[in-house]
Length: 131
Image (cartoon, rainbow, N blue to C red; front, side, top):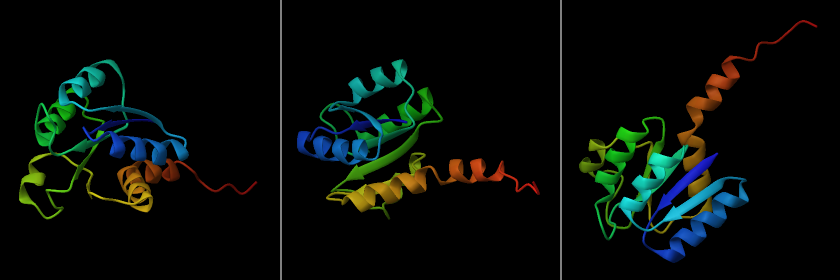
């Protein structure tokens, strides 16, 4: 699994990257929306953690562009300014929202939530045998 982190805060990128790598995930981190879009054109990401406010763009615009380029990439918005109940978040096809600061348990729960449908599909293909 390859996950993209888009955030201009180096400390947050470092911490989130360490959390994800500890779970065996491949991680790429960038600080600009334009750089993220370039990467999405080149690589296949299972999920993108996107900061709501970036130096060169708005996170929701980046999320919409990622969705247009790679509809299968799951999108999680992160911010200390927006909150999960914010109606503008519904304009973007997000699987979740992380309010900063967050804990490792929050990240793990978000990953489980984001890929729950995939786990259910895999379980659906397993049938008990009588042998």
